[in-house]
Length: 145
Image 1 (tube, rainbow, N blue to C red):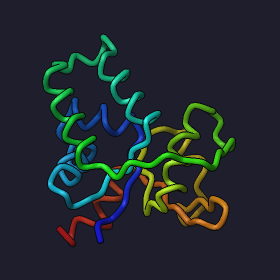
Image 2: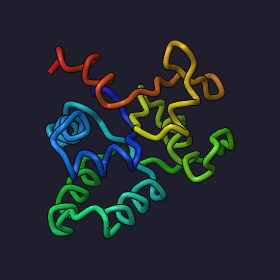
Image 3: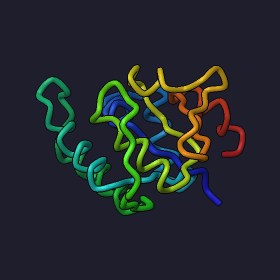
Image 4: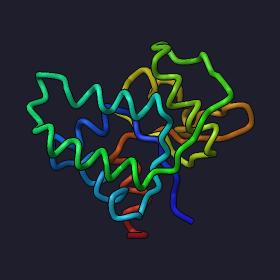
């Protein structure tokens, strides 16, 4: 069983634009080593984000990667709503993680990172979810791959 991850848009954009930990996360997903969880709202945000003019990512490249992510994803349709994040727009990541029983939420977003406790966990109505930055996830799973 693959490790299930919900990936915040900040990590997707950093992965498309760079070569660091976020890019390594994208590559592990594309190789089938990590199972990305997507809802319609999350994917829409990814698509909107690649159009930000400051990014300077070739759209054709971004679309190819997003298409591959979409095709490899476990699609969820969250029914439970949460309203616990400072940025209400980020609750969709928590809802997808809860619906799929994801192992990890990978983010660079302080609004999401601040939700975790000292064990890097967040309890969502009985489901324990670890919230990590890309480098932390790589430290946990890289030996497996």
